[in-house]
Length: 292
Image (cartoon, rainbow, N blue to C red; front, side, top):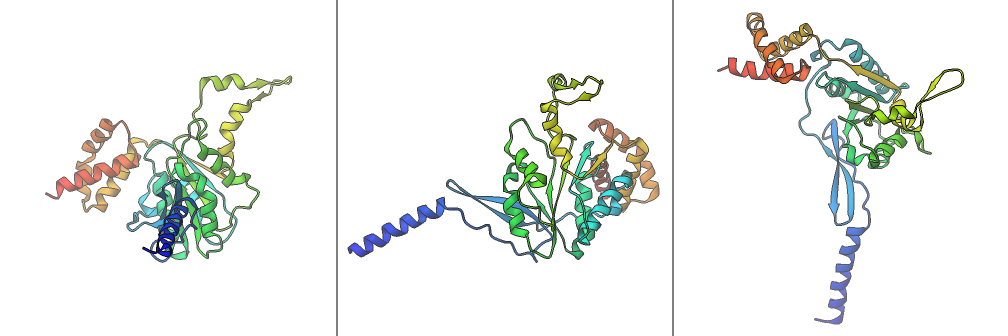
C-alpha cells in the first residue's frame, strides 16, 4: 500500500468522525406525502439530528363525530378557520378531563381543513427544545402548520418547559405567521401544584391577594396561550349518546343500541370513567361481538 493510499484511508476515517460530530441540516420531508408529520430524532454518536416523518395512516375522525362538546368545538374550529384563512389566530391550550375529545378535536380540524393547506406536526415533550428548528423548516411554506403537543405536563426543572415558553412568546424572533401551537393537558397550569405554593401568596395593605414568584412561574406558560379551552366529564346521557353514535358508525340499528345501554354503563363503571374514549372502546367491543 502506498503512502497516498494510507493517507486517503486516514482522511476518510477522519471525515466519518467529523460527520458524527457536526450537525447536519434538518432535511425537509416530502410535503405531498402526508398532511400530518411527527418530529423525530436521528442519533449518530453525540449528534442528534431532527427530521419530519410523514404519518402514513392518519385518523379519519370528523368534527361531526365529536358529540356534547359543542362550545369547545366551536371555539377551536373558529380559531383554526381564521388561521387557515390567513387571519389573526391564537395558540391554544386544551385542558380538562381525560378522554373528552381534546386530541380528537385537533385531528378532526386537520381533516376538515387539510384540503385548504392545513398541516399537523406532532412534537413530543422531550423534543420541544427543537421548536426553533421546526419553525425554521416550515417558515416560508405556503401551508399552515399546527404544532401539536399532546398530553403536555412538566415536572420541576424540565428543559422543555422553557423552550415552549420562549417559542410561544419570549423569543427575540417573531413567531412565524404560518405556525400555531395547539397543546392538550390534564393540568391547566402544566406544572404540578403543591401545598407549599400557597405560602408564597402575599396580602397587600389594601387586602388584595398576590401570587408569589413560584406561583407566577407556574401560570406564566399557560398565560402565553391566547386561547384556553376547558373540557369536563360527561353526564350519563351524554356518554350514552356518544356510545349510540359509534354503534351506529359500526352498523348497529336503533334496537341494538337501546339494548346495549346497560352494558355500556357497566363498561364505564368498570373503568371509572364516562368519557368519549371509553364510549368508543365499548362500541368497538360490542359491535365486534355482535358481528359474530
